[in-house]
Image (cartoon, rainbow, N blue to C red; front, side, top):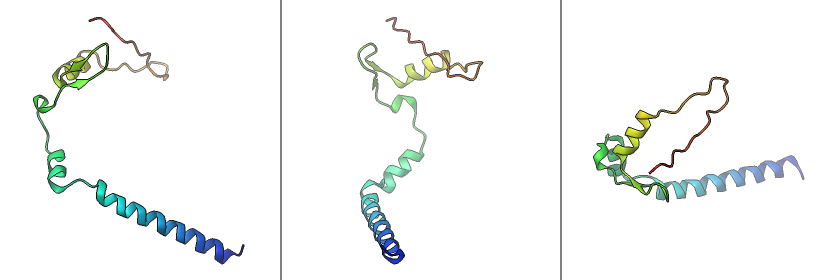
Amino acid sequence: MRARDIGLFCCVCLGATLGVFGLLFQRAALSPEAAAQARTPQPMTAFEPIDLGSPYGEVSMIDLVGEYLEHPPRVAESGAPAEKKLDLKC
């Protein structure tokens, strides 16, 4: 293959990729109303309960934030990731 053919192939592939992304972006973009709502802080009571699976079930946002504040993540002293302990007491 000649250098011109390789360059043409790269340009066509790049153009096709950008064209597909451009078409898909319009479908994935948020509406202006949804974007404005996302930028506005919401109270914790406005969120629906989150389903955490079998041992916990549905948990409200207030309970999740309270649990995080009472038990913040620990940073390991040696630089290794902190050991995760799961408290399954109900």
